[in-house]
Image (cartoon, rainbow, N blue to C red; front, side):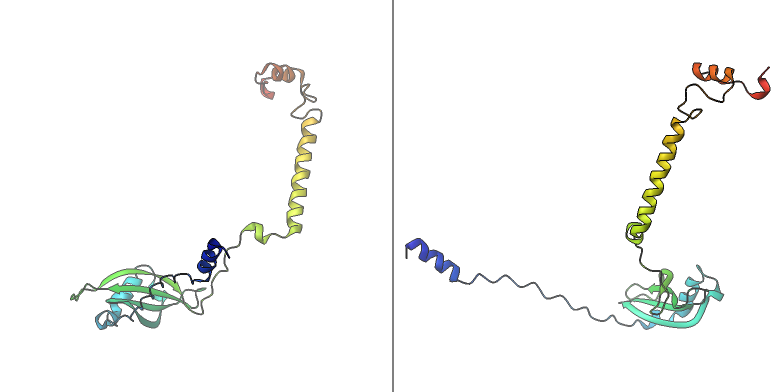
Length: 184
């Protein structure tokens, strides 16, 4: 074995340096439940009533803590067609403050809400038969336009076919033909 071959064999046999391990993801702690924000149901309901009629807000009520000093109040939606949806109002407050602030209100789907299916592009929805029919219709339409352009009296006919002689003369020189009421 030559010296170069021995060095190559040693380099191949040596294990590669281990790659540094990716840092472990930080575990998020569960947010503290803010008693002041959770108890302020009246502010949350009043905020939702800014975007919905009181009759559209159902009796059900839940509170979830989203972060420190941030809670979301959920109310059942009583709108027809929105079974399983919830009106929400997110409330927050500054540290060491007693003032409650409404961050956002809206409508969210619940676990059993009826949702529209995901959008699928037309090219994926249409069947091969429909594509073939559309291409055939387009070809027939183009053939009909070509035939109309070449027919006597059609747009491509310079003689004018069924036009009156004065209309043909006007068409040839580019002037506007006289109207029926203007003809002698």
